[in-house]
Length: 275
Length: 268
Image 1: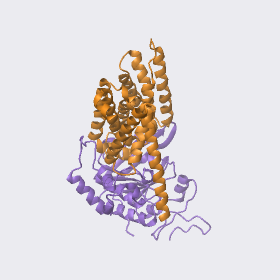
Image 2: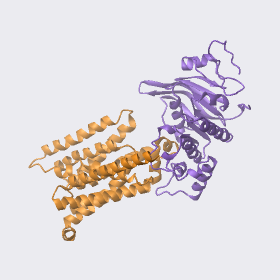
Image 3: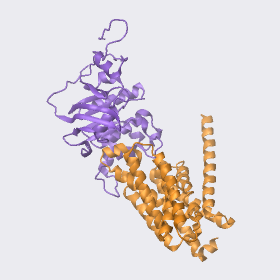
């Protein structure tokens, strides 16, 4: 694979996009785990499918369609969360289903032979084009810069929203921004691992990283590194065994997470016994 | 015991007029009028669901009134940032959040004016360190908050609220689920702070009511009583619907009449 890496453009694109996706997922994944927004992010991710269909329907780059629709969904979910006392699991579930259905509907309405949607659902890192890479880099930069610029207020918001509001931090702005960043991250990751498998890359690296550090910044950094390790190893497995890349990455992540979790359980049992 | 008398010449720092708050169709607070004076130590008591937290949130500007108004130093609470330091119930925190004691206290130095790419200044650090010393948590500063006892976490949250350099300290059940020693530690801290600032505290701890606060507000949707912490049996009846047991720890007076068969001797 390493020889081919220098030969083939598509492999270089794949490696770069895997690294970029892992960085965005490491940062945003850490945030959504600490803020208990995993389901919410799942909802936003699945509306991306509607956006992909929308893009095809309009004849534009599907990723741009996904970007537009996920941002709308993110703003919608954030507004519902803010304005009502309703359990947000319900609107999220509805956004989730409606987003997927819209995707199917738009594809059906699009004239001509229907495109293969598995690329978007399960990812196909080997199909990342130069244009895709440009969009991914741009979105990645936005995510990194936004989190770096607002790091302290963001951390205060994550830890204690009420206190942050009382001292004058604009928590409404931070919340909307955070949801938009989740949407951007989803779009970054679509090609690498796909809409359905994105939750693996968002949740497992921070969950594993948390075993090693209790510092939010280090957690984001370590999660990104773990993500890079997972995606590149998954890519290598996929290339070597000739299996779909999204599935290879997601399964590899799940396997490592499972092993780490079992080791952690055993270690805890051991310390308990020694006490 | 020396109870500080309430000086009527103190200015009113909080004015609440005809405050009514609805959650959808549920009335949480109805027509509450309350003034808090400078350097007052106000205890808010009342049954669960009686609107204590709602009143606190209205004072803090976290919820807006359905009708009536709240003024803190003459302005709406949402604009009174930096005047109030808030100590929320520590039991509702996710204790596994990746943050240390020091980082938590420093958080109090943030405000709406915090610039992007912010770094804490030397002054911020000095303020945080002196507060941690004052509250005896300096040696714990590098600990993640999950590794603290309830009392230690509570002192961390008080230090964070003080880092704001507030004029009013607002606490929501600061001693709930703390052991007796931690409780008395917290109260001695509050007594000391009260020399410089107004304190508003929601509590279920009736012993604190009799020994530390100047005035109490009894809340059960409506404000049933506001004044000196000697409660009549009638007020308590209206408030809780039944007589409740109060313990007076060697105080010059009891908060409540003893209920029972021995004739209601209300002095210890």
